[in-house]
Amino acid sequence: MKKVLITGAAGFLGSHLSDRFLAEGFHVIGMDNLITGDKKNIEHLFPSEHFEFYYHDVSKFVHVPGDLDYILHFASPASPIDYLKMPIQTMKVGSLGTHNLLGLAKEKKARMIIASTSEVYGDPLVHPQTESYWGNVNPIGPRGVYDEAKRFQEALTMAYNTYHGVETRIVRIFNTYGPRMRVNDGRVLPAFFSQAIRGEGLTVFGDGSQTRSFCYVDDLVEGIYRLLMSDYDQPVNIGNPDEITIMEFAKEVLAMVGNPKAHIIHKDLPKDDPKIRRPDISLAKKVLGWTPKYNRHEGMLKTYDYFKKVVEVPANA
Ligand code: UDP
Image 1 (tube, rainbow, N blue to C red):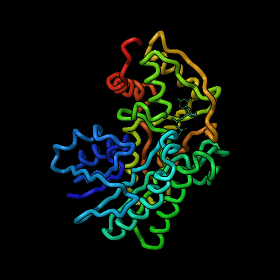
Image 2: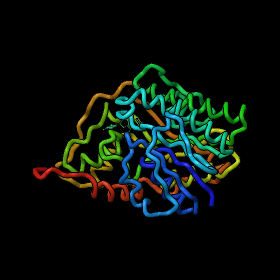
Image 3: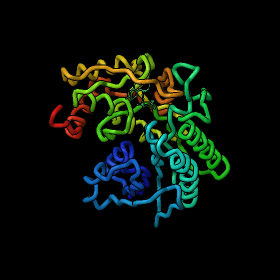
């Protein structure tokens, strides 16, 4: 039985990846320090004899006994308000954490995939974003702690690949959504769904003309699985190119939830908020034969089902 270590296993993506690898017949070691992850996301896995949970901060030395075949490094605060609150931890998990795990991969002769991000392209001057674009990142801006940690993570990963011969994979993840996103993580989809369900104002930042392209989590997991199992060691974008303005997105959520009290309000646009974002997925199509299967409406309905269950509505709402 192949053994896989998944860091950030109690988080949104890590928990879905844990489900997938268990379903594929792997023994899964989930690791998390629970600063943004939630044990509720993985408690359904605890009865499995092939799932183990290690409570650990990967920016400290990582030890796993026995053999290890694969490492998926998915630990990190990932929403802008989280990494603003935890800038040092964000930098440490992307840099020191990645270093520890690459060292572990070298020691165990394991193949390792790192969760990189569309944020390496910053506020992009090329649209859509291809893997060959080097990006436009403000290193000292509020998002720099995340963006630069991820850029450093990519550089270190390629160095271990070329210098130590570690088998590495790099996935650049674009905006992804689905069940188990944290209600209060500040990202646009949990924010809009919870506000609409509670009958509050949907907080559109700026005039809402900025764009994002949203990928349903099952599609992302499929892309990551294929990339890890492939021979391709250069960065690959995984995301859904279906681009939409944030204002249009707010209107879609309002229409789906249909709460007459919900409405749109505006708040200031955060500093360095990327104005446009859409993945060019030609490379993923070519080397992985991957394309997203869920359209936004299907994915949002599944996600709405989840938020209906977890969003608490005050009695007087
Ligand atoms: N956004 C918004 N209202 C919110 C949260 C986010 O208008 O309550 C906007 C944000 O300014 C950005 C987009 O939605 O342009 C996506 O933000 P998110 O934090 O989800 O992810 P990002 O892609 O910026 O990392």
